Length: 197
Image 1 (cartoon, helix red, strand yellow):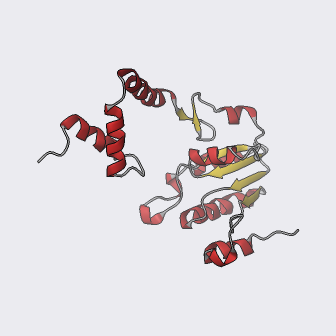
Image 2 (cartoon, one colour):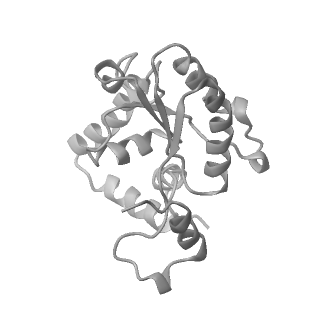
Image 3 (spheres, helix red, strand yellow):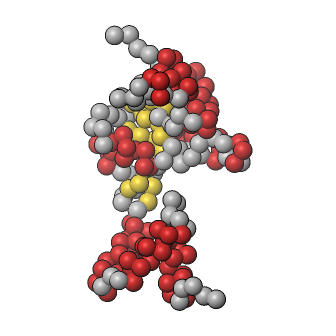
């Protein structure tokens, strides 16, 4: 027995393909679309098509851009490059208004269990950017998980012989957390990354 009529079932199926969207959320999204006016539905579908037509990857850093080169690469000093896993990580760092260098998006991390090796992510692009371009520091800002740490170490081993400073963002105890509730990995990392006051 069919639970949904075909158009709604197809829409629920498409929404459920999005990351983090389960069956109930997909159903709510589909019902919201059904109840939209034609104008709202047209604007929604046009926004999706517009993203597909106009968003590409920056040829230099790999971040999202409407042009061949993103505004960050066009307007900032290239002495410091912050290496991140995905474009969404660029947005997270930009919100801080603390970093005035450029980025390099790897589009993944090394994960042998998933069949992802160094040649499957954007490491070659990073190395070509560093060669003879006045880069003084590379900041490794990959996630503090096994894959992120392995990727950071792999890239560090490639860059250090070039005489370029390589740093890693600090990880540890979040502000406002009681030590007794911190997990052992975060607490250990906080000790390793401690700094002089």
